[in-house]
Picture 1: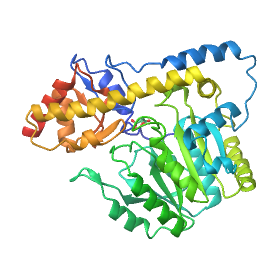
Picture 2 (picture 1 turned 180 degrees about the vertical axis):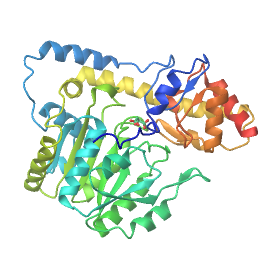
Picture 3 (picture 1 turned 30 degrees about the horizontal axis):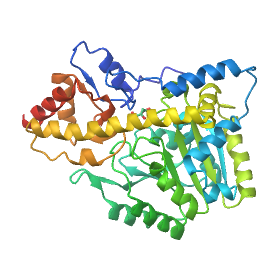
Picture 4 (picture 1 turned 60 degrees about the vertical axis):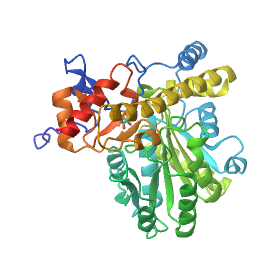
Length: 398
Ligand code: LMR
């Protein structure tokens, strides 16, 4: 049975962890996997998370099953975080949310649910998109297609081409969108572009599936949810996957959510039964611990305030590093214009280097990034930024 299978190549993103870890160079810089790091290179446990975790352990009196949808405290808290307290879709009771094992779990449950709704559906993903979108959606049986999104030359979105490609996508098909902090390119749709895209979805009838993995890491918790909230207000149906890996720093606890917006409350109730049924037939129900922590933070005013302050500090640090990196690259004599890095948002940007240049940075300078030259800005620090800028400038000049 097993003898026909050969080993696979390492995952293009996760494979970098092992490579960087075993590099003995004390100057190595790991800009690979998208985890937030502080100045000392540590991925910290947020203080609100630590406090809420202790309180959850203290309060927990049973380990009985929590059911496929997860606890209501998490689901209602995260729903309000995503859609905003006063949203018309919440007021008309059109949104149902379940706790999932990470944003990946949300994408996969969403994809299986969509396969059930429209067996022949194609899901359109941006070119480029996060590498793991392809197996998460494709392995659920959805057909995949790409729409143009990012132009390397101008380091910007090619919105007109994107809209022309999506003009041919109609009812029964799905368009996957990055809610904010586009992974991998860091170039986000403007509010005007979200509105234009919403009009196109309303006219053509395709279903938007929004991946909101980085809420709070770009411009702010509310600002980063603009696209989700606008679409939920103006379209009859929508799917949203969110992640608490980055904004709560709960990576290994696997906490995320899937929200479905239906046309009417009764329809949304029916949709929830299908989502729960997909979950039941997959992993039966989500783990409880991480969701309980998030539920506790969102329900407690003091914890929530502390969390928002810490999240803002992480966001500000990334945005400061973006500006500083552009300055340092210029100071090191890099002839290319890198100013786009300061304008983009979230953890990632492309440096715009070739695969060979990325390899050269790894082999000669112990600088690690994804083969597409995607860097995790949060991996930069005051201690390594000069070395990084010097190395990139050297590779560009060679
Ligand atoms: C990334 O893009 O680096 C993160 O989302 C981690 C992952 O699972 O790929």
